[in-house]
Length: 192
Image (cartoon, rainbow, N blue to C red):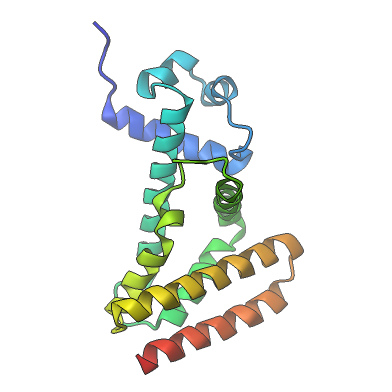
């Protein structure tokens, strides 16, 4: 009789896989090199994940959980700080040197998803990003219909600014535009 996979061990393994992907990327993910890097056999991976597709789905879900937890742990998320202040704090956190690999991984996932190469594996953070931020806007008093529209616009602008920064390295110019975005969002929240 096959042993049942230990959920705690599986969670630890998923965190290690997410950490691996931040350093190696997703586009070339293969079970054997991943197992070697983790110091495991491919049998250990297939014990916890039926195949590469199951591993990928579980990993995307874990990345989503971790990213949402990081965002919610930022100062001011559960308080009265302005949305613009939270956007700026998120930027400052995501663009710290030690966090850039996560930002790059998320943008790689966005690119692969846009190219149709991750069908069924896009983490909720990408697929439901507008609803996630709209929830914050609603908590600050914005009606749901407006919150979803503003969230979609703000997320798209933020993502574009982050890609601009990652590709050009021009922090001063990009952050001036980010500050303008924060001011606009705060103005929209105030007028709601």
